[in-house]
Length: 199
Image 1 (cartoon, rainbow, N blue to C red):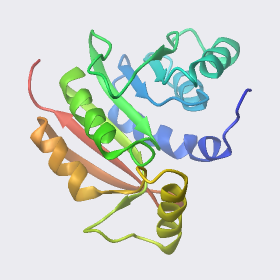
Image 2 (image 1 turned 135 degrees about the vertical axis):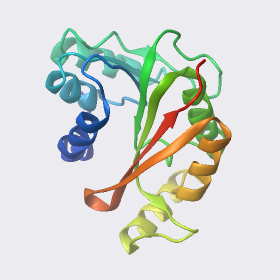
Image 3 (image 1 turned 30 degrees about the vertical axis):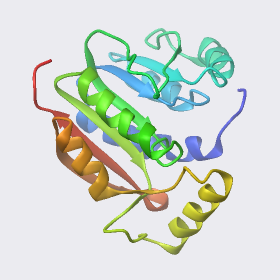
């Protein structure tokens, strides 16, 4: 597999367990920031009834498309480009917008666009699911998360761990209701929000 990510391989099993709890058997999942496609391949293989739409930026697409083509199942759609700086999300019935380790990588404005765009794209009762490390009341939960935040900002000053409260407030303003904050391995969290309005 091109560009294999050890982190994605490590967290795919615990993430799958959360998805099983929240997704219907025939859910349509839009993944924002699919990277190498390892999550798409693993989740779609375990959840045969769902349809999974991988997306990423143009620079990543060739690797993503190649990996899905070589290792993905028939319930994974051809990866497509999704630019968070534009308001151009795939149309149709989207039951879940799933994004792992993206909101702390992209800039704050793009993180806002991720949440707002997901809220607009989701069907009524659809869910936005965000995986990664977060701060709480401005504080890091562990020294390792503080070190990770410092590393991110050295690489890109616009990156950094986001505040749980900021995410929740933005989600609420976008028409999403907070439903779960689940602790995950390696000091990560899985936040789930539900769309409460019919589009």
